[in-house]
Amino acid sequence: MERFENTRQPDWDWWGKLWPTPGETLRQLGLSSGDSFVEIGCGNGYFALPAARIVEPAPVYAVDIEESLLSELEALSAHQGIENIVPICGDVRSLTDLLPEAVDVALIANTFHGVDDPGALTREVVAALADDGRFVVINWRPLPRETTTVDGEPRGPPTERRLSVTACRELIEDASDTTLTEWVDIEPYHYALVFEK
Image (cartoon, rainbow, N blue to C red; front, side):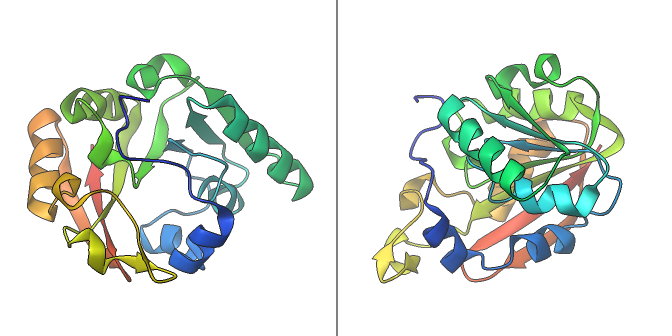
């Protein structure tokens, strides 16, 4: 999967050790009832599932290129009785073609560092946002990989692929007509930036 280098889907146990309360993280980032939402590279739904509970009855568009992960997400949402998730299999570089409507919030978590053309992706995401929509990027802090451990093992992208807050902000603001409105530290190893259209 060349366009998303150095990324792979962690299992639920790993996610739970890193983010035991993903819904609280989303609320901290401003997600609220009624927000239409898209997660870019949703995997099997660690953020999409709690997002659906927060925003219902608004839709959560869960976009990924891997059909097997979307199948897992569909099974989990059915098991949990969640009805407002819309799985979409496709390349996020064509996000505006994939979504049936503009959305209030777009999230990309833990994969922006691996995008081959972050400027082009940013422009596509911003084009998919409603007026005053928000683009939320969660990144690993620019710490040496050997210091970001989960269960005693180094995790996350290689050190040289990690983006500082300044570098991420410049990439997004240079590529789009957005403004950084919030910067949130997410313990233990991440930060989030919220940009408004």
